[in-house]
Image 1 (cartoon, rainbow, N blue to C red):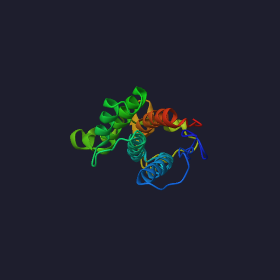
Image 2: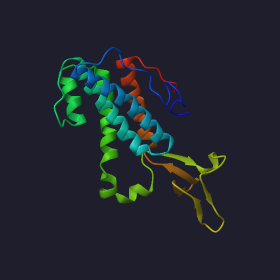
Image 3: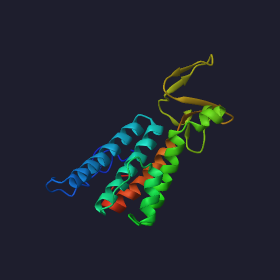
Image 4: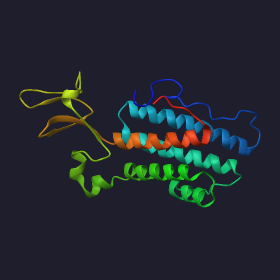
Length: 202
């Protein structure tokens, strides 16, 4: 429900291809990037559904890179080999390849990507990995009809693939990077609406 459900506007992206024959190398590049955008959207949705929120953020950043690369090709510009997403965003901003709101959204997704890709917190502040940050979502256990974990009377925990925290207000489940993934979705949807007029169910 959070990402719009199955079907177009949810886990499936609307068509961004303009159709027509594919003959030149430029047309092949456009078609390949258009296909990649749809595939990256779907893969990010699958990651979200399976609670792989960090991977979801990274895939959405890849999607932004594909969009900006496609927009460069449409304007007759060439993307430098080995350009990072940050460099691509800077070039698009400087040369007015895409509107300001798209650049702003791309920068926000890139900032989230940097946090997701580099294990800076794990290396520099390891204790924080066992609690929640403003990029995570915490749901009190009492909010679940069927909690993903059970805390037994003897203090043991059964369940898998979740982080449980205990606090003054009771125990809860931490979904690492979930808020980060939702922020990235919000910015990516803005970009896709702006460039291709796509609609979403959320």
